[in-house]
Length: 189
Image (cartoon, rainbow, N blue to C red; front, side):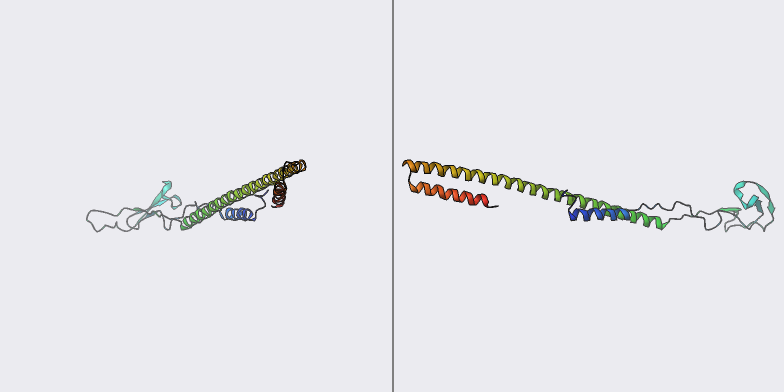
């Protein structure tokens, strides 16, 4: 009950709820990026091959279109091939940023959880110390009560001796003082 009602622990628990709300798993964009240009493209030199739906990957040739003479590269004997392949690599920076934000939110959540555990441990130690203090004070009150009862018995015994003539006023006064001190100590917190 003491742990539930502590405002510092309630504040830490609220901080965890806020951090957990910030920690939203964001999936990186997994959709492939469309290429900027055609992947397979026939060159204008030489004859152009016509494919079904203009898709050379189908393998169905509809015919040929006459083109210009084949181009040659700067080196003798090397012709430029009729097809070219283009490869485009796209690295989405948004996914890198979202992963960094996710990692920061997780670190904040983990830190808030550690702070809550530390606050709970501190509160537990404070509660334990308070319970021990109450138990010690309870035992102290019992000991003072016993000391007062013992001082009363000593005074009664000494007064009995004084009546018979086996003691004197000095000892009786000392036991009366001890009883008064015991009563004062019993009333003290």
